[in-house]
Length: 314
Image 1: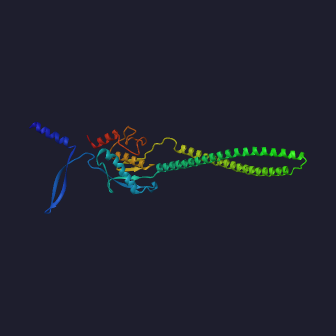
Image 2 (image 1 turned 90 degrees about the vertical axis):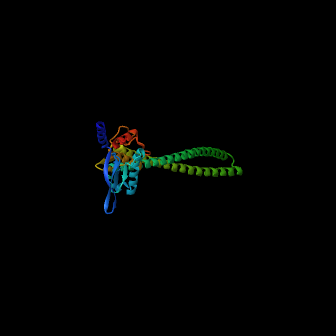
């Protein structure tokens, strides 16, 4: 009997951490309440944390419904891995999830704007480079043709001048020779007109090349200026709090992509459940969002271990 009493006491003591009793109203019968007392197996995570959507600053350019969907997706990262309903959306939920716009997102937006401008300038530079290369290739080809035509013209001109000299030294009696000289002169004049047109075309193309070079130099200077601005403002490694959980409030301050936002929300949900930071850089609960897979986030062993610890799961 003594051993039995000790056993019962031990069971009562050890059981008190996992068992609780609550009264539940089942129904009303004949004007009387029918009360049922049931045993509930209880752990810290028996009931999901209910959350609601609070402030969604319109400066993020995200609709409230879209933000809510991403929030709900973020909790699934934990729940799918743990096989438990750990978090649950409720319009009146105690934990408020807010999207707060401040200097962090403003800085991120400016950084992204500069990056887009640099990308656009780089794209324009590529177009200018191709245009310059095309103009240069065309110029070199036409210049070669012009030099060849000019050499042929000078050769024909010399030949014509020699024939004229011979004609002048002759008795000038041959009408056929005279007509031939007239034809040669006409041909030379046509050749000269053609050469002059080619020369003007080359000069025009040379001006286009010079103009392209000036445009490219201006663009390069603009690009370099923006690169220096970007380096001055954002070149150094910056660490700041993208999100914070405190006193039943999750505030998200900065994100760049929806995947980034989802990962940050999952991290803060971990804090809401009572999990501290872990040491694995790949973990969802690592203090810095950098090396995790944003496109396909998964929990590491450290994440799972900490969730089991706070939920008292063996």
